Length: 474
Image 1 (cartoon, rainbow, N blue to C red):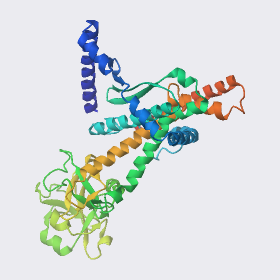
Image 2 (cartoon, one colour; image 1 turned 90 degrees about the horizontal axis):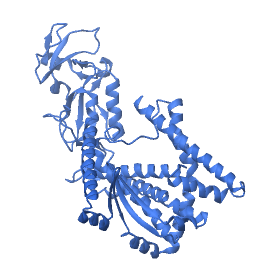
Image 3 (cartoon, one colour; image 1 turned 30 degrees about the horizontal axis):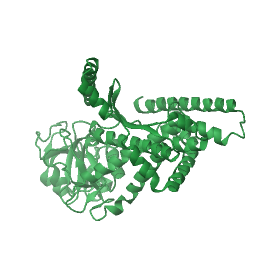
Image 4 (cartoon, rainbow, N blue to C red; image 1 turned 45 degrees about the horizontal axis):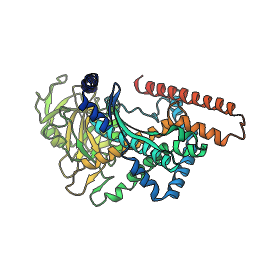
């Protein structure tokens, strides 16, 4: 939270300086500066920096001329898909309301993506680039469809508000109004259609990635440690290291990311696990301590206090060498799990702490004593390197693809819903006038129905927003 406030403060300061300098130069009619803005298309406004150009117009015209009939069919199919998606999208944004009131224990379908709150500040570069790509691809769809329908483009531009990059395309409004409703629908739905295609492409890329990366990486046999923040207690000597492949936690097999989360959750919810130790070994290594003496090992680092799993047998504490006693020992809850051995349980100072034996591929197990919550700061990946190539970059690409999917699907959904000033506002008008003309012949009645749908869209979005907010923070 403090990182987010600091970052916003830096952004606000830089913005204030830029806007102040812009105001001074404009007020003083500083000609070189004004000429620079005119030639480059830059504009500094209170809410952001904007860059508008007609440089891409020729490129879009060339794209349309490559296969005109194919481009027409492309946007016809896109208009159909967007039309069929209106009702499902309304149902999706209403689902969090049902989720909040009917089944609060189930995970929410929609999740807000806010740097510093729901995602780490370190993910901000992925965030910004993914938003930029999603917005650019959206606006490119509008531009290409408009050129196909002989509507001129007045400009194509980009703007930045704080750390939110945006893109826009300015179409000739008069030419757009002269088109038929079906032609308007193809243009208005083109942005959403391109976002849908981008989402499908990212899903396809994730599906085929195991085949593409098979010569270099594999998955399903463990997880790889990608990053360990300092100060978590896990980065100390003898602890986890970057590129370690984790295969189990206290004999709980770890093959996937889901296994990792389930194993840690299991250790968090259950009491401390014990270790099966032969009576001969524990008698040989044991330093018996008086009952009631909790500092049984005098703070030695290699030894630790243990007790019998069944306190009815004995409440005696034993000081035993941790690694020697537990390295090859089976995990247990009571003596019944150990056959002819005894189940000895580590004694920890705090009830929430756990002793974990983390199995690591091709080296000795790692022992950790502390809170399970520390593992939430450890970044792990599902890929395992077959060669010397680092896993970090594959996970970075996978995370980036995930953000593109999240933002592209979010942009598509928010533009399908009938909301004023967004694509859905015009999409719903075209759909109603095209498909309900025979059922509602009077134009004014259709307009009233369209207005009602827009109100429903706004109310649904507001209720959805509050439901998601209460699900996460209350």
